[in-house]
Image (cartoon, rainbow, N blue to C red; front, side):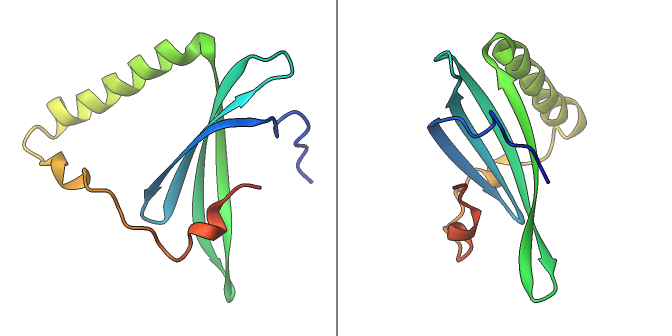
Length: 109
């Protein structure tokens, strides 16, 4: 059984990004000492017999690492867009997806 002590802190802000069978959650939470951190969760829907299960992976990102994380992420994205796929039209992915019937199943309680 997974030990979640200290991981279910008060949620301050949440943003969901749907990406096909995956959903990413960006959640700002508070610590006991009123500091803040970000959790990034990837949830992937999997068939389990006649129903769905969700495989989750989580990253905890603390304020002292925000700048380094954003810089590395932006650098990696820029490298793919500029150096590896310079002729690819990434604007086709800029459209927001419509809500799906599975939205209620993806909420964290």
